[in-house]
Length: 262
Image 1: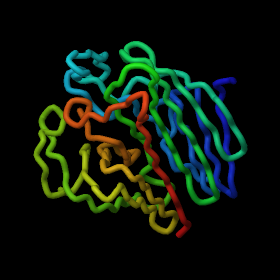
Image 2: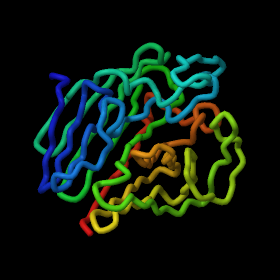
Image 3: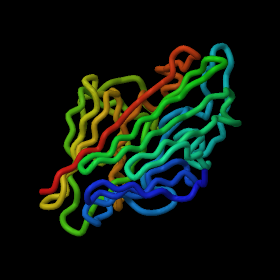
Image 4: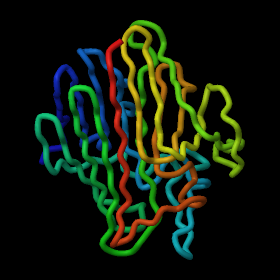
């Protein structure tokens, strides 16, 4: 199928999916109001087969050290798939299924599947990584850029993490856990009961980001947007908390954004 943009609709919600631009959600409009920062690098892109930074671009794969391209020197960041075209496997008015085959520089064959499903009051993103050959460590996450301002007051973010990962000078977790500190953030938080974070544009809209996963990265150091990123492990997690994809056990994750008018 073509990698042209796909529009999903449900009620007054409209989503643009961009298979040709990293399989990202390029836009989410509620009643005609765009919630995501616009631009080729923004929207909401999938992070796979890792999330955030890998220290020096290196990770241990069994007994072998692998080197990924340093696309955020001195580290590698946000996986390999956001800069490539995905294949559209199936589409309807309110759902699209995309696939991507992992290729070099990732050292293992594997298939990533992402399902984007829209209802009148929620968007659900589901992703899986499967392999039919050798096992390998991997992570799944999403990197949405929510617009800070929709024409009224700036958004507020409310979430209640159990801890904050201490961030070193290299922007990577040190391994120490801290009581959560006030922002601005480029930080990872632990939420053992599952991710739940609420963005509120006062007088306009409330949007909840939820996931069964335990890790949340928040990045709000840019004026234009607030990023609320559920993921299956912390930054540098291929080294510190690897999750194995095996022929018998894929890695799967889901996040849901639900909203209501204020």
